Image 1 (tube, rainbow, N blue to C red):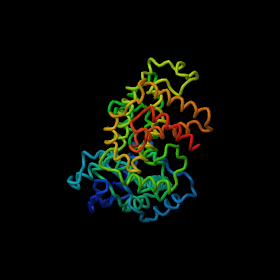
Image 2: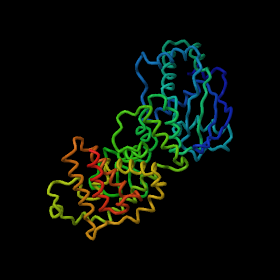
Image 3: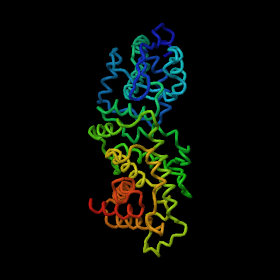
Image 4: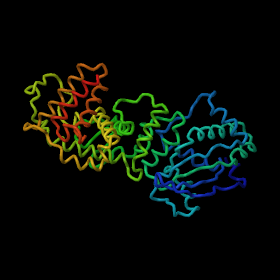
Length: 401
């Protein structure tokens, strides 16, 4: 690289700016040399430890691409995003944008072209080992085109990442959500702290949930499916993108999802005095799924059930937005004079799922999904009635298994 830096070459140049009205962002079109790109691209990869690793197979198409790159082939534009959108916007002068990109790789994310970037790095390393400075210089001097999104929020990034990679075999949607929102670990959303898997929860509270469970819940919202998605093929992604196309990308949907769930749980806690519950007196002699609202609803099963239910109600035009759901929370009532009765009834349903289901976790997710749909669907007999929702969700579950 030292020999390359000493020689004269074309500098990075912005050729155009186009507004992406779908995600309320600006796309700037940049021409740069491979050498200048790799100067900051390697730092991007170091600062995004959750991104996919490079494909190692020597027989892959990337091995062929590496050989072609050494010969000066032209590849499609790579797509990046500036995640710190408050620093650079559509009015920032060209030179200031270019300086910021070079000096702040930690705020850049590769949306499309990650494997091509790994391939360029591998080609550079091979040429350095061969000690052919002229061939290395020619390779690093080849021009490359970049599209860089500025002024884009995280949900806009997620939407664009998914649309750019639908035709390939991308990393899972859940993994991409983890990448985008990993900085929220150990932070609070409306008082709900997102914690890591290793942190654990010695004394769980309504104010704490595992980040992994929150991501799974949001993933279920996008796919409208509470069950784990082991293989996301092209049709799965297209269907999910159709769901997302109706969302407002100017809002942070993940935060709205968590915020609504927090408010819902707070309302449920008002009608379950779990500290004074006599489970044996209610006929629950075995160990229940959980002995408090927190232990029952701060779980992956509950969050995925909620996500799938909210998504389906939105598709059926029974729920307009998470903002509307927030307004409904305060109207939820226990449905019985004994306010604990709905919770006991729901625990009975979970116990029956445990004894009857071959795949207990999936059965529990399905029961939670029907519970939230019964509770939040204005056309349901159980609308905003916890006891009826607890009774009827099990009937719906039983009819499906």
